[in-house]
Image (cartoon, rainbow over all chains, first blue to last red; front, side, top):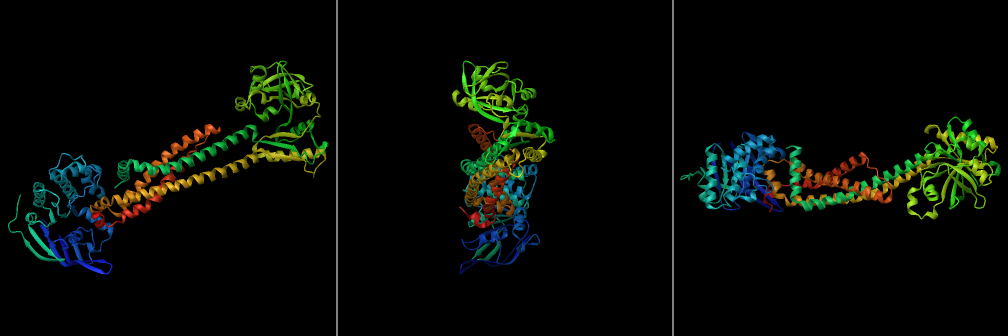
Length: 230
Length: 404
């Protein structure tokens, strides 16, 4: 499903070269739930950006659903972000001037889905994250946990191949964290492939497989022994 | 992603920053409204002048005797005028024009008078509106009958009523006035001024057969000015030239160039050209403010792009292509400019009518002006919106997402 081979990412600022990813190879199969852990600066965000087609690698290959995306141009990458990838951010990243419903509809706007179908699918996605009220409110009028549920609905609305979550519970309290992780586990049980970056071991234990990184390399990759299931 | 959604999105964004959007539009509003006002007034002015000329007769030619090198035998006799009309088939009407100052009195009231003498064709050439009675006819002209036509404001001032047909008036030099019968009243050309100036300064206007004028004022039956009217616009030039030749033949003065034919249409063209250049010049000056307005749009769009960097990042992350972002911001700048253009159009038209009322010109707003105004303001929106829109579209999604 997702395969990266010998991926290296080097940042150049003037004469300074910073290697964020150093010859990483990784395979993630359908239905997996992977947590990526590591200290800050270890390259986990860079990995996420490359997997999410937001950033380009310096060398290596990235095969998504059998397609080599490392050679694609900007607009084709945008299409892949739109159809194949669902993003969940730590800071939610909802558009403040749009209603909850409109936020969830937005990826389908860029996919060229008709207004009626958009409405139906957005409502369906919102019901999957247990949010059927306050959908005509703006993001500023709902709680953090609700905001992240909106963001999840937005991420899944185009039925992506993989959901990429960057510290999805970083801004949430314990109760909201459990709510969100419950939804993510439910989506995973329904067949969604999930890759989640986190630095909290408690949160990582919700996943099925933990990858640890340090200095741009994968130092550990093993299944979760005592998984927390909500 | 279709147009309607783009427009809806742009309107939402403009509405979210009402004050700022309005101030940005103001530049466009001022630019468009001043151009519209100037052009409408200019065209209105041209129409007014054209109208005046056509009233006098676009088909008419004025033949003047050049007094600088004319001998007394060169002056045009009334018989010459009859011949012009008879011999030249293009000429439909011809009249001598004599203009002389005198006095007019009703017995109780005496006023300075401006006396015009002509043939019965004067009525056709002046194209005046007859309010009461009739104009003097050919027989009265031939025989030099003591009849006159006066204008309505003269009637009001001398008789305190308008319909004065059948009444008598004494007309002539101060010491030797002769009694004439008023046969008709025409609409006054100078009503506008009549309200403004005090009574005494406006002379009485009297139209009489040229023969009668000559008799009353003891003049020879000659004139230095003839107006002829051609049967159609195409024949105006030939009519003037033929009239000149005929007069030169009758007076045997060919080669001395005594008679000057002035085509009214030519004068009109000259005036319209000058007015057109003037209008274009003032409109061009006004259009500069439109450029300033456009720079204002660009400025605010750049601010908007910076402010919404994060939004752009989010949109790109969930699948917006470069073109989507570009169109989104371009739509916004075009809508700002277009709304500005439409408001400018409204204010411009209102301004043109307001100023027109003060200046006594009825402005002319042509559909062409309206369409050009709207298209031009859209063009300003596109031109000054492209740079900010490109800047937004080319933002790096990761950098944009990180932007606080």
